[in-house]
Length: 588
Image 1 (cartoon, rainbow, N blue to C red):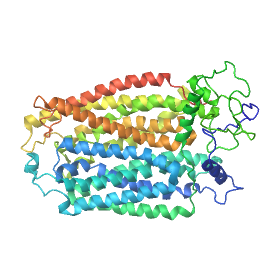
Image 2: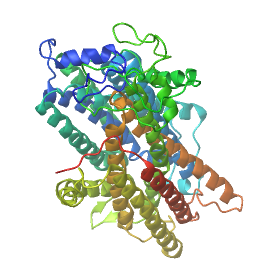
Image 3: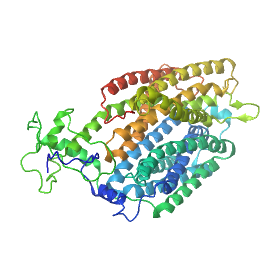
Image 4: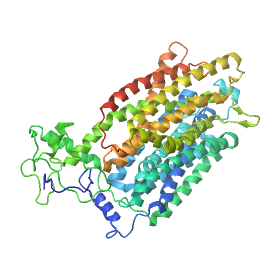
């Protein structure tokens, strides 16, 4: 019945009224009702292996795609960076759509299957562009390429390339938002073993991502640059085929959760109900029966119960009991006129998260530049390392991965325990503090990048050869690549933790997709800034981002990004100080 305070929720809560999907999940976790217990770690290799090989395919393109577009399609760096950023934006926006389709229609399993075959098709088309000469412009000598005298690509060739990228984006949209939630479904969260396995899974997930990036930026890039582009694309394509086979091998042990509607409707119901009851007054001192707070008997995850708060008080009207709105069994008659306290508080959680999410978009601008213009810098530097090793320009990002691989275990095993003893907080510092530290590293990255580029350009103009390569080792890029690694550890991992802890439990898949949406909007913002800077500075005849990097003013562009990131950091600090955590954990 409405408002009964004697029926507590045994320290669990539901963000929205239990759907059929959630009831199925509860049955699956109940050994008396479920014919298939969650397999835990036995199922993870099949699920995680699928995404690992999908990332190997997509990252294998991303690591060296700037070089591929410039050398094989004869694009200048602005054209190549625009396409790369556009593809990155589409790939990072697609998981939001994939999460909705999964929750509302297809379910996680079939969404991953669709994404896997889409990625395979995209990789096959991309391999064909490197294998069949008619699908790309005629070869061009390096001298003609530097002087922009090569035959450009035609519309058909660009169209085939874009079709490949579209299929890859669709594949990403199906796999990325569902892989982590589907993996979590395989753990029995009602047992201590299942909860520990779930916690360890996130560490394994990030570790595999780092390993994949190391492989793509070393082995794959080497094959693409020094052996064959077709072979460099063909190997990830074969890996994608193996990933699909591996994923289907585990079908006999997976736990499947049926889709029964989107949680987006639950959010809309709160606003609609609050609007329809806008003329009613909220009682100052609530008593039993005034607000709809039914007891919940089952829950998908163990979380803290949320009580009615005064924040965004106008939304509380959605849970206000008016006349006869409750059925005899305790359910509400019309969810578009009447919502639970839990629904209302979950919507408030989302409203609190939005400012943090918005500020994180511009916080990723520095990471976008390291994936595009840093490669352009490396192409005009001495790539020789030692007497025999020549570093591919697309592989300089390995320095970032090494920094992550070294720093992350130290941070997790040494620094965090020490901080926990001082602050008495789980993790040593709050999640928002961690994100803020990452934003500071992003600003520092752009400042260092600007100073290094100034030195590189001066060296190229003063002592460079006819090819425009500066007599300056590519290892000068190491400081900025290490700093961006630190920014990634604090910002990205911090946001993943923030969304998983602060999002309502039945919107975790949406929360995971929000990470990729942030990347997407950051890529679009980066494209927008690049276009404006190129147009505005080009009016004077000397663009900051001209086709010849030695004649451009890339250092000034880096300083501009540092200034934008600094302003964004100030706004983030303001929002972070006003944020109310859904629940913080202190260590006794």
